Image (cartoon, helix red, strand yellow):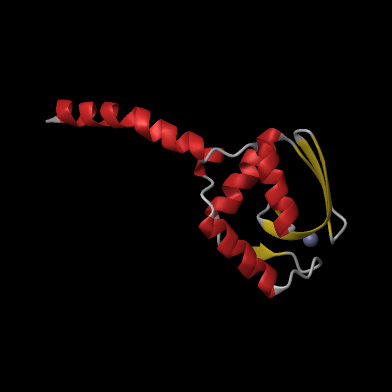
Length: 119
Ligand SMILES: [Zn+2]
């Protein structure tokens, strides 16, 4: 029984891989999404409002409303992307004064977009 189960997985995997490839998003697109939603999660799990974002290749320089600066590399992007994907209930930065509608918009954006393949 276990053997047939393995075979099933094997048979399905090429198809699954192809489907995943379709939805693959590059990190640059992640930056663009960050640029769009204008929200950034810090390492402590605080959600900041982005004042400005400068994308240079695979590096993004983010300045938040509370004047914190984040240099985002690929590895950190993964962390942030995972964070954004997994933590729906957020602790918003008080200094940044993120409006509620923005957080709601972020939540719905994250819910509708499948991010798993990006990681
Ligand atoms: Zn902040």
